[in-house]
Image (spheres, rainbow, N blue to C red):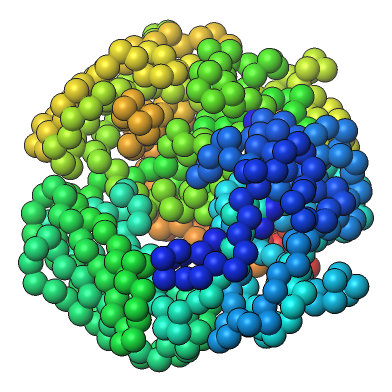
Length: 638
């Protein structure tokens, strides 16, 4: 998917319109045409619906598609105007603050990805002038949004400018002279308002994610939260209450210095015990003496009880292609996910020698996803948020354990799956079997990999910055390549409409082992998909199930030392008998640099591996015995 990073106009919004007097407000909805008007001054900014200001199609969560915004786009040759936007500025009409007393706050929504080229990021600032624009003072250097491709609410204190009769608020964007296709900035819903003397807002009370709301019955959940001081007075103490349904109240007092427009994170000291399966509603609220604005004091959430916590394994599907210049990022990120986490990974190629049209078309039909994109548990994730989103999904409830067994019978692959639910649930549940293959390569020009990272112009990327912009086919090896998904990419037909705790729901897959597949490099992945919301509830895999007896188990005792290493490191691993092990050192892109086949004895084995010829960098040591395979990260420093 081609991401568009739009410079979204800074949004100023009042939290409680009834309690706060609004001094200035702008939503851009009434501005005709593309140019800012109605008292605004601008050079390069435009106003329209967001889709009309984008370089190309982009996924914009949490925003109204047809709402008008003001924006400066960082793209070139398309809707955003010329590139090299080193100083693009707009500012409001004059605002009179001569009679305003006590204070004034600016609240805005900002859509700013802070894209970087050559390690130099875009810059956005909010500024103020009190002399009709003759000079400007920076009030805020705008941070990147909390979530890529989404609006984030920001606040600025303008109280020091009370008494001035000609206050103008400016919004300045710079691509810092990079002359590249960048993100830009967009803003909307601007408000300058008079704050209350005391106004503490409960912004967050966990769980905020429904998939983090589960606990085993008779176990506890710890509630955390965030408050924001939206008033003029510094807060020194507040109380957080919560209750389960209509039961008793649990309270905790916090003594903390919270200046105006400052957030404070807290952990409630009284754990929440989950007494039963199913959902229990939670009401949380804060109390501050003198706080007259009660509309932002309360949050409603819930917890859910389960019979057990299934082992959650995150499924990551990646769109890619040899012709895509940013595909090396996907290769690097998948290697990082594979070696640092337990994850199920699938690279879905389109229109190249590894292309899988039906699989690629499924995601394109879903929401026009194409090119390079990432789906975590079948939910789109921007590349900039891949690892943080993955970390959050690792903590999600898995709904059911998936037990796999199987292997090859002649030219067929038989995989059996047993689904063991942790809760009772209804819906459109589907089971999918996915076969992936590692170490694919070819000799034709179509196996060459385009590389935008050549020369380091997009920063370091797993060594691809040291490779040419067209990497020869003989220097490329492709892993996690999707070879077969059955019964279909969407999992149809339905496997079950009801899954209950205590039940064992079985399905057997039988597919052809294609001649071009290398049975030594295959993985079998099973996904439990809830089609109602297109969410992969859980996944499981058999690693290299055709050349390792049974499931690939982790070696019970494996380590390397010293790490980091200079001249050598020692690999320590456990084997089950007198045999041989395969040990190889690979770079982060999976290329083998050193291979060894030491004899093993029953018990702990030690092997010294020379590293003096390896350049400083990150490597992976792999050890494969007859019982198991494991990969360890090694850093070499000279």
